[in-house]
Length: 394
Image (cartoon, rainbow, N blue to C red; front, side, top):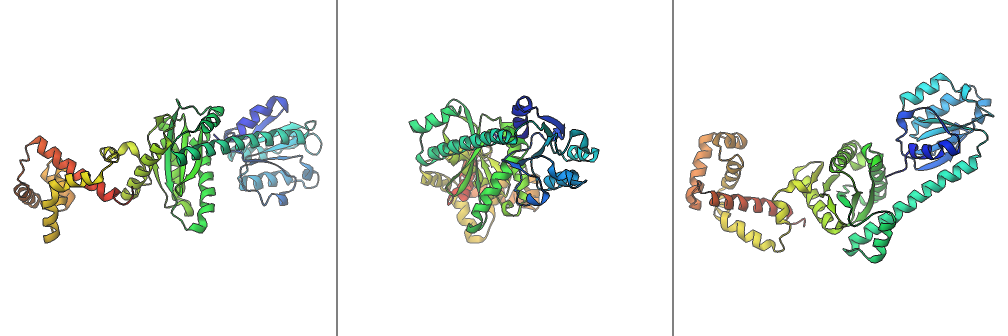
């Protein structure tokens, strides 16, 4: 969970007599750093998500300094402004236009008395941000170690327990594969991290990002399924509007108790492959159905032999005659043997479907009223589709 403005405000409200003047709806903004600024010209290099503090010195030189300063900070996507009031600027000097701007833009505006030492305040905030970064760094290293080693070493477990990441807790994992040029990977990683953290839902979730197998892995800790899916949906929507992230696909694994991260990674990677196959922004492992069972098969040749035993005759016929019997059978069974629905899906007349099904019945020597035979046929079709999708990817 990233550091939010409201976290820093709650910590400083009593100790530094901090007062919220406007922009309460923006207290959930993320804070990445703390910055002291007096001149609009000195904020051009801000990257966003900085909490800015000012003594208002420039207000004694320029009458409209504060409105222009606040507008510039909002345009730079900073997290909020703290005014050190009492000497160069007073609370009563804050124009109503500035308060209105902060309210409409959800931009938090605070004051602290002149007696507060800015060095002490900045040191307090910087220490909190450093502590958060160190915590995140240690957790990310521990998660990476589990993925690389395939197990939890005593040292890794001790690190995670220090930050209350317990084996009995629940974890969810997603895999995101970059679709960009190699020289853009650093920029891609930085942008993806920023987008993931800045999603509204993500601000209230505990998660870390690590790199594994040239992919980005997100691990959520003790987060509900509904919240995670909302976070993924927000992330996916944002990626579609961001040029470097536009083509990313996301695979999401099921929530599990325990740090079985390598298994969860494989599941999420399987979901990612399905997302790419279906051209969907993201896919959940739980929605793979029987494919999730096939993924556990150690011997893919056995699966191939099973489906070929059932469907080789149709495959050979289609290949030799340019036919579509396999497609017809798959569609016919998909729509529970409903001729009209199958015909509509295949864009042909239902009599054509009826003719093909009768031919298939004769070719396979099957009784379509035999439930067990139909199950084996559907299973063979599912295995065939599974191997088409996953043969080269897993």
